[in-house]
Image 1 (tube, each protein chain N blue to C red):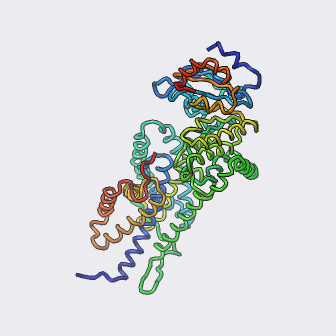
Image 2: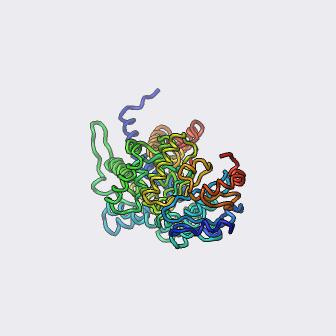
Image 3: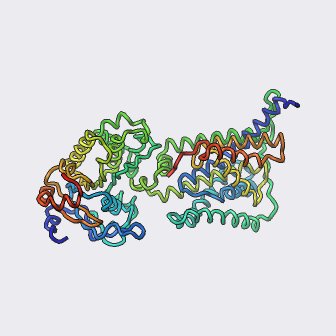
Length: 252
Length: 293
C-alpha cells in the first residue's frame, strides 16, 4: 500500500482522511484497513466491483456504520464514532445509492428537510433558490410526492436535498445506478459544476468510463475485497490497465 | 319482525360516534408510536388510565374539568417522555420483543402502583356543569357531554393534522416514520424526535382516558380494556396509519354501540369478530401500507 503514498500526499489541504479503517457487519469483516484521502476542492473517485465495500466506506464516513478500528479525520477532527446527525452538521452529506427520497413528502418538503439544520428562514430560502438553479426541473415538481418522481428526478432530488445542508464534503454513491445514459450525462455535468463551485466530492462508481468523463487526471482509488488496491490519477491508472481490468472485472 | 324506530337508530349512531371518538384519540396515539418507533405499546391503555387519574386529581384541586384535561395530557406526556428516554431507548436496535415486554411490564406495574396510591376502588369524576345537560334536536335528546366529546375530538384531530402537515416538527415526524436513518443523515437528531413522538402518543391516550373518565370513573384496571380496544382499532384501520385510526375508531365505536343495543351481551365480542373478518379479507387493515419496511 506504500507504493502510491506519493499520490496521497500531494498539495492542498486535507478535507477527509481515512486511516486504516476497519468496519464490520456483525461478524463479517467488510472494510479491512481502508486508508484514503480527499483534499479540499477535488473530486476523488472510488472505483470497484459490486460488494467490495464502496458503499460501506461511505456509510462508515457518515457514521451509519461506525468503524471498529481506525480513524476518520474530517478537517483534522476525528469523527469516527460520532452519530450521523453530528457528522452531517460538521459539513458532510451523503447521497445514498438507493436515493432514499422520503416518498410521502413532497419535493419541496424533501428539500426543506435537508435545510432544517439551518435555523434562519432567509438562509433556507437562499439555499432553495440555489438548489433550483442546479436542478430547474425540480422547480416544476415542487408539489409532487417524492415517491412519484422518475428515477432521474429522484437522483436530482437527493443531490439537491444534500445541497440544502450546505455541505463542505459530498459523498455521492453511484449516481449513475439504473439511470438512462442521457440522465447520467446530465448528473455528471452537475457533479463537475458542483466541484467548480467549490465543493469537495467523494464519488463512488463501478464504471471507470463514467469516472473518466469528469476528467482524466481525476484522482481515484480502486477497491478490492475491502481494501484499497490501487490509487492515483485516472491517467496513471490507465497505464496499469491489466490490473485495473482485473480489479474492476470489466473492459473499459 | 319488530322494527327499530329511526330515532333509536339515530341515537345509537350518535352514541357510537361519541364512543368512536374516544377510540380515535386512543388509537391515533398508538399509531403514531408504532409508526415512529416501531414499538407496539402494550401499556397504551395504562397511559389512558393515568390520564383519567390526572383529571381526578387536578379537578379535585382546581375544580375545573378543562384544566384537568389539559394537565392530563401534559403530565402523562412528560411521564411518557421520561419512560421513553430512560427505559425504551436502551432497547432500540436489539430484539424487537424487548420493547413489547417492557411496555407489557409497565401495563402490570403502573396499575398496581396506582392501587397502592389511590386504593382499589375507582374514583368518580363528575361531568363538568356546563356539559351535564342535554340538547334537544327535534325528536332527539342528545346528551351534552357526548356532543362535547365529538366536537372536542374533531378539534384535536384537525389540530393534529395541521401540526403534522404544516409544522417543521410534524414534517420531521412524517419523514422519520418512513426513513429515520435518512432523516438522521440530514443532520436531525432523530433520537429526540422519538422521545417527543412517544410523549405525543401517550398524551393522546391520556386525552382519551381523561374525556372518558366522567362516563366510567377512573379505576386502576381500566387500561386493560382500553389497550385491547386500541389494538383492535389499529389492526382494523391498519398499523401506523393515522387515517386508519380515525376510520377504524369510528367503525368500532359504531359496532359496539349497535350491538350493545341489539344484543348487549355480545358488544365486546362483536369488535373482535369485526377484527377477525377484516384480517381475513384484508390482512394489512383498511388503511395499512403493504410491505412496510
